Image 1 (tube, helix red, strand yellow):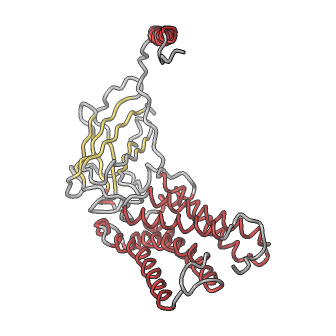
Image 2 (cartoon, chains in turn green, brown):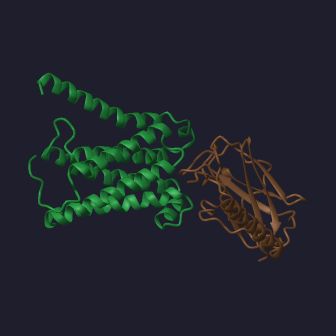
Image 3 (tube, one colour):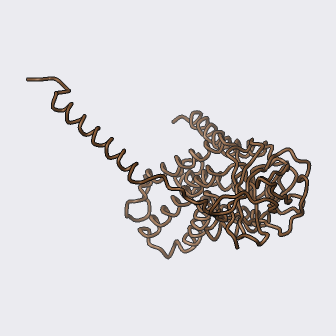
Length: 206
Length: 166
């Protein structure tokens, strides 16, 4: 590919990604419901939206799809983004806890009346499990690590997407559906491209 | 070779099946008469007690009103309307959080067991636009209800209690 074409392609991909990440945040920031919410509740909601945005970034980094971030660079950032994901999930849950402890306790104990809570809690534990697993990655064989990490990633994405889609009031409906669709598409693509179900050693250069 | 889709034999067979099914249905209707089931007591809803504050004061309206919370209170078994029953309610509204004292209020049912409260517009909180109602005066078993609005734009919500003697 000529340099100019490659550069134009990179600019386009990064612009599209920026739009995919920022439009849902901007749409949520324009919600009229914010005027009736406390700052800590608003912060908790936006931590959730940021977590969903990071879920789009993660498969793109793991698959090396982002211009300039292919290979080890992308995967190194993937690890940092994973750490950031753990942090925003904690902010999300802590903010909701401060806003209304009984709602969060019910959710964490799987006795909440809201259908989305269970999905969110499952996704949260899958995020924590993925982080713990990643810490011990070097001690794990690739044939254990890869399917385990993929299974947790699928649980995180499934749980988070269903959680978000069933919730009313934090994200704008269309931008939420769009972001969720992108997260699912990126996850499916990276799982297919990296043939994560195939038992084999570390990825060789393609 | 016949190409008729509907032969006389198949027509008779089909007719027989339909007639048989109709007879069975009719017979079962005669065998099992309509049952006069009593009114089963309302069960407390999961999460219904969230942010409950006991002893909400009886008020004419909560805040500056604009949203209708209505419902009925009946006795389990015979469904008789229960007058003078204290129903407490609270919600996340345009004027306050569920936890705020000013978001809580109570009212009494009238002679027909009907209650009505004028309260501020309920807005979605914790993922659903919902209200909370409680009966906990002691004469009957305590019940917490948590109705969800079908649309956040609704300006009214209903909840119906069927109370079981304590």
